[in-house]
Image (cartoon, rainbow, N blue to C red; front, top):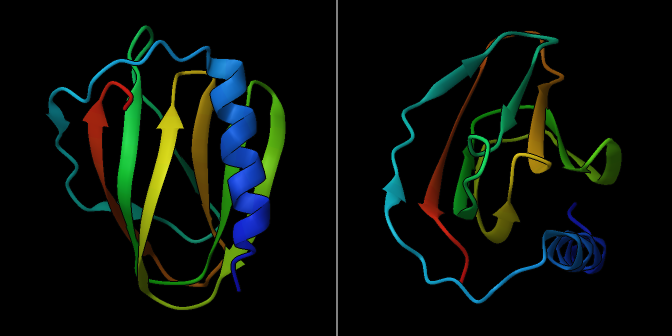
Length: 118
């Protein structure tokens, strides 16, 4: 089960470290289904110099969800079932999401991202 309090604190820390400037959301970043093999990880992060706001994250299986701030793991939780997670996470190339497949079969993820911050 998600600890929203922990996630909220992690998001606030990420915001403080990202030095937001009140940008307006711009272009939607396309995301097709991404397959992650058992035991493998995938980082959701924008290219260098870009900023993304993740609004929804779709997972279809067992995984670890981490928010990475620089080289530090800021937040971690585990999921065991498929779900859609409405979020508002702010990402840069140094503050990003890492999904690790902890199941025995391939995991499929996708996300809705917009370039820029609110």
